[in-house]
Image 1 (cartoon, rainbow, N blue to C red):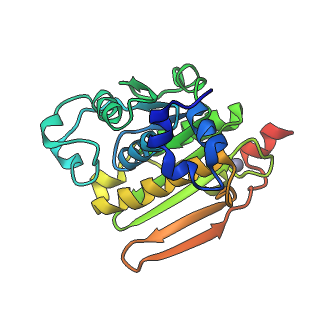
Image 2 (cartoon, rainbow, N blue to C red):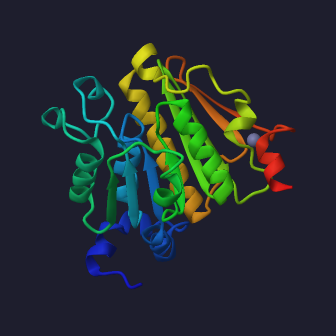
Amino acid sequence: MKFSNKQIDRYSRQIILKKIGTIGQKKLLKSSVLIVGAGGLGSPIAIYLAASGIGKIGIIDKDNVEISNLTRQIIFSTNDIKKQKSSIAISKLKKINPDIKLQSFSKKLTIKNINKIAKNFDLIVDGSDNFRTRFLINDYCLKSKKILVSGAISKFDGQVYTFNFLKKKSPCLRCIIPNSPMDLDIDNCEYEGVLGTLGGIIGSIQANEVVKEILKIGETLCGYILIIDGLKLTFRKVKLNKRSGCYCNEKKK
Ligand SMILES: [Zn+2]
């Protein structure tokens, strides 16, 4: 692919970086990322990935915008209330970067549709708000050997972790949480509350990790969990090991 003059101008601040250059920017433009959830995490993830020139972005979310979303779901405005999240998000991203392909899926991600939806994307970013979806994405990425960049927020805290299932040593979500929580559909933000800015912090780190994984630059977060305490402002990177007996070990044998 050849850059147009507009593309060179648009991406100039990234192209100038030695670790990116024109080759790296082309890699970003040729990559495809599926964002699960257009919420507190999905909003900054989508905005930064679209702006940085990820060539194809898909967003899946079945919900409509509610007034209580607006403290953290910064891709939406007050006049978007009651409108469908994924399609509104896509229309906002189109304005940010008309140079990229965008696809919205206004539905719930299920075991029945995940393969059909996710197969056309290189990398999956999880910004979902419940364990059922988290386990579903984990198992799909493990089976399809895809990179998964996941994040979670609750109260004043957040976590980010990456699983690169192209690597045999990569742990999975079931290594950390062996037994499914009692209520798989629980939404922590709704029941426990969350400070809006945590979505920006964690979502931006997830977008940063996605770009790094695509470009293969820096140190991967795979094999670690980043735990952020927003009140004390501490960032802890904790090693994650594969759990013997986990389903991800059995699969690889
Ligand atoms: Zn595992």
